Length: 253
Image (cartoon, rainbow, N blue to C red; front, side, top):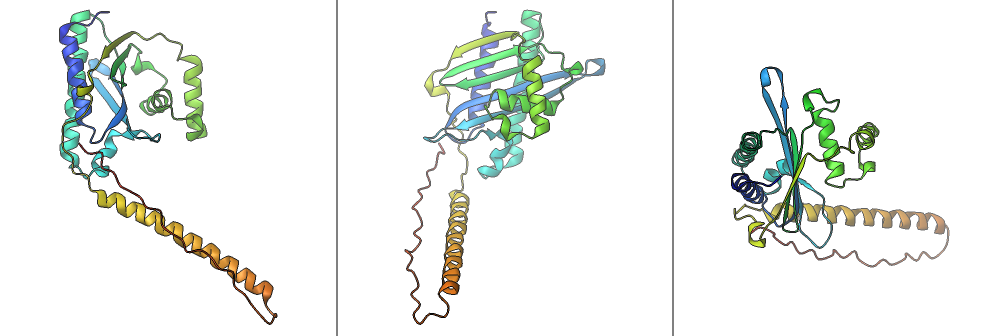
């Protein structure tokens, strides 16, 4: 189905809102949103999204709700931006119904390599056997490529059951668009406190060094016991532990 100018304009707004919610360079974004119709057509919404930070090494997905603590951002102000994004998706839902005379209950947005992809589904979530928590697990495995072994036995059962019995369903509709490179970065300045990261690295190195020293002492004590009773005791020499140099790079725009 061809997207109208009104729908495309909403897509562009969602792209900008997502980019502005991420305080560092990112490689890809994955968002899930769904509407569940309760009694009297009361709408209940759920939404979450993750982003993959950009870097030479593969990095783990970051949950949007982790951003305030990670980057020393005012949580209330940040969550207000998240609410604005959710409201934009609600506008998309209403506009879609009006233009196409159709409905969707859940959708996934993926932004990667300057490409914008949106998939719609019309699952009847109010009658689904899968709860909100289950859908979140399925999303993390299917779109974030989190391996099955990372989940508990009970969670793996839910995911595998879904993949075997539900994943064959066709996507209701899919829309694709190329995004110019200049549009995929945020322009909001975040206060990133590198001292927090430096303290974390310092603590990790200190623990590592102490652990090495403890192991060394254990070896020395065993050696002393073995050599006890001999006239001459020669303790082995050990090279000093040198902390590796770590350079903290700020990805803040």
